[in-house]
Length: 353
Ligand SMILES: [Ca+2]
Ligand SMILES: [Ca+2]
Ligand SMILES: [Ca+2]
Ligand SMILES: [Ca+2]
Image (cartoon, rainbow, N blue to C red; front, side, top):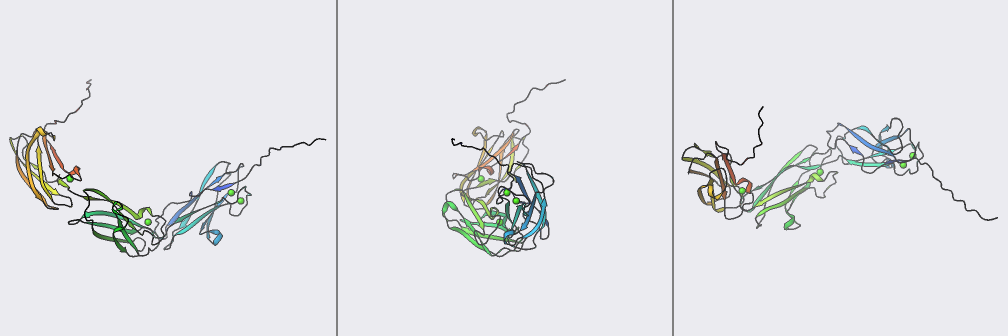
């Protein structure tokens, strides 16, 4: 009698519920104290069989360490294999607290025997203090001094601890270029800062500046709003004011023009020139008048009154420039269209009926 190898290809139909990491949600991360928020979690039937009596229990804190049950949310009807359903429960936001960790557990009472009882849980950190930049701007002060004007707000549900606001110019080194203390803030409270520093000698151009609050003094769920990136302009920035441009009768042979030049940048400017063009273009051939400005102090405003030969039937184009490159060209031009539209256009054929 020979040996018989008996190979049995077996397959067991499994039951399994799964909560995937990172699928828990809270509908409002910044509730007012006492406001009801909605916690939700998605339970997947990752087994082979449809399941009934599926529940997801929500806890405030880890249930294995004494976390309090918030609610047990039932899944209505049958959860078919391969399907998932999201269940939710209300939770009254804490009046004031640190960060909470919420847990969702599928089949917490273990009414369903599963292939894997260890994949039934997900968690979500929420609430607590949440510092954020709610406004921030960089202003040129005088010389090489710039100033960060910013508002830091506590958007969270818990009191924030005293911390620091740090300013970095990463390209210039790893150390903070400026810093100041931020006091502890109540939920909803804001703190406005005005923080000047001397940027020293910098190349002309736009330099990215990072301001960050609470780099690592205390824990926050949302750290993305603790950072703001601003642009520090260094160098010449002349501008023509679009609000202070006055032109006389553009059909005359002599037309008075009043134009306002602003030195908007952080440095004094020498040898600037205002150029006025006819025909609503900046072509050299259309140049009417050049008006030199030998020196402009930082922040200086100069009103130029001149008379240009007309008529300006197509319109007037004004530019300002200096020998040193301008860090923002967009504000160096103003124009006024004339009575005649001289711009090049493509006309579609018109069909009359
Ligand atoms: Ca499971
Ligand atoms: Ca189970
Ligand atoms: Ca924050
Ligand atoms: Ca400019």
